[in-house]
Image (cartoon, rainbow, N blue to C red; front, side, top):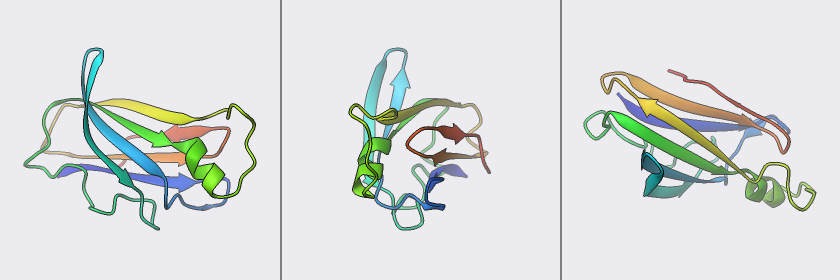
Length: 117
């Protein structure tokens, strides 16, 4: 089924279109960049799935969201340094037959995530 993500800007009540995101595979302390992308106007990857079911492997992954860059781009005046700069989510894939959706709800001061469907 694959891996996907979606980001909602809870400050403005909109999808976080334009936010930069990086996806990594991880192994202990090491990480390998899989791809960088910018969220579309719906707050999703412009390519759809980050991994399709055939490419997704059991293992650990990291998504890094450029929260401060996004909110600065929205004209939000942030302190220096910003309270949230990059939000990093580390998660595991245990069953590649299932869909893993990793949503992020974010403002300049808080964030929440969960395993969606």
